[in-house]
Length: 263
Image (cartoon, rainbow, N blue to C red; front, side, top):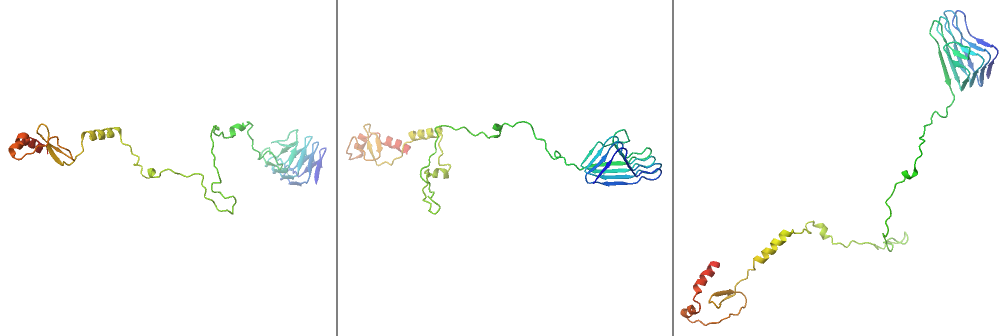
């Protein structure tokens, strides 16, 4: 379940001339390398570096311990690591006095190193929240202030039954008693302008009413007056002939002419 290498222990799949071999480790708990321990799939000459595959929950390297798949003239190998946590070991392009993971080549192409960290990061899906404190009073809608001396009173049930099984009483607390005729004809409330009222008053004062004449009489000047109604003559004279009529009314014909012109 676990693999421990200590004091220069090595697991090699290296060659001097051909391609390097392959190393595969599937561990259930731990891979521990201490004190110049080594996992190697190096290739010498023109060969390519081998492949190293490691699957372990935890990998620890201490004291200049290395995992290498290097090559000389060929290409570097491939290193695949899947773990929840790797400690001490670190990828570097070449070997040093520290704990190295490398797949380089001196004259060929460097290999690849893939480290899959399977550790769950709790902060990976978190969203940074604002740190500014919100004033609660700014979140409340301010309504209109209350004015005093105002009341709305409804007396009675307003047609609502005492319980659902009773019939509505039809007692309505408010009834519109306005005259609706003023709202049907918008021109009914038209108001005449002051100039129109003044001209109508002047016309009524200047123009007298026309009344049908019912009789005529002679005034004190001997002129004929036409009257309407039951007007009593101021002077009554009995005329029996034309001479007598001319004596009492010398201007009769003149008056008739004037009256005729007026008519």
